[in-house]
Image 1: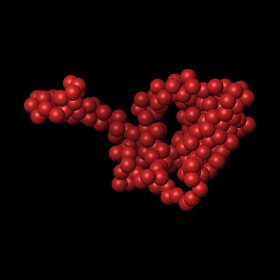
Image 2 (image 1 turned 45 degrees about the vertical axis):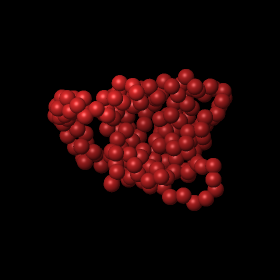
Image 3 (image 1 turned 180 degrees about the vertical axis):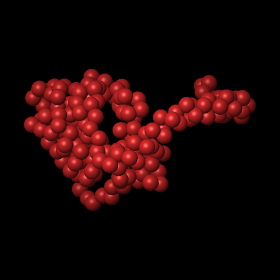
Image 4 (image 1 turned 90 degrees about the vertical axis):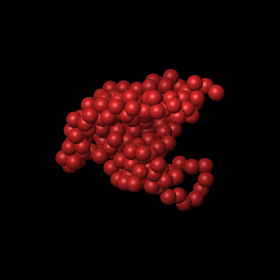
Length: 185
């Protein structure tokens, strides 16, 4: 048994660390409260989509005011830089790319800008995210390299139910909404 699992199972160790962890979590919540209040206010006051420059994805993107991706970009200044780097290490410029669940198109645009002869198939089933995806492909001038598909991609031909959180389409799922940030919304 490794040390982490032992610590998780030991009542004594959990009790020793529970108060410091509780205190740390409260302190972090206290320190982040002003930023969260500003982001909540932005979400409530902004009446239409927002256009941002996102350096690591080499483009400008339109995002909905309720999007948690927008919140992350505004609070941290970046969005998934490690995943973006991993994606680029596996991108082959003369091959095609399929972006299933493209959302607003961060990876579709990034791939399209790096491809030489390949093209991107960007599939997005939600209406709102697909609309933003289409706009983002145009804004970033990669329409000739991106094929847009508004629908689900599956290995089966059948009808499917897509659960959507309006304004936070990044959490859409065929298997029910399970992400803790949006459960019950």
